[in-house]
Image 1 (cartoon, rainbow, N blue to C red):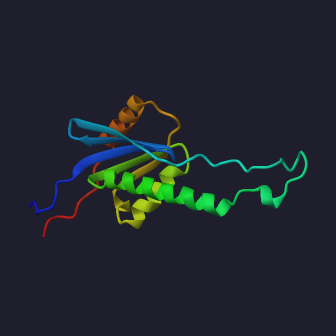
Image 2 (image 1 turned 90 degrees about the vertical axis):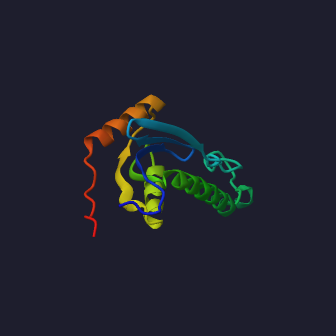
Image 3 (image 1 turned 180 degrees about the vertical axis):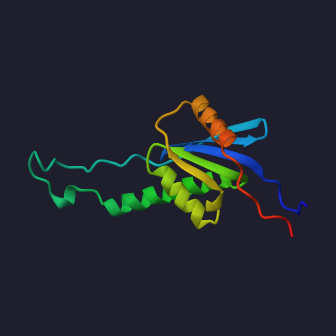
Length: 151
């Protein structure tokens, strides 16, 4: 029996790092892809002389706290945008080369969407077609989770 809620799409896979997320949504034979870009700047190098080459005064080092706060704020906005795009999917596959996939998983758990995550896998650079193929093959081989019988 359907309720008044919006129907949920079947599955989605996402390849994510701190700069870009590539989303593949699957709903039956339909496929939707999208790209979400972050505005996160790469960690800046400290200014001043190298400690190995000579003087290195504390005053020459930019404040790490302010840069870290800016980085964290940008990552928060980025992950919120990604989570909004994933919200309508029942099953999720998280892929990526580094920490971003784990950070996204932790945020999904925090917003009570963690149960939708079927797997978190390490995947280095992949082409868009390779990501689509990996998501399709993962969900073709993964049986759906058992659902509670209707009352």
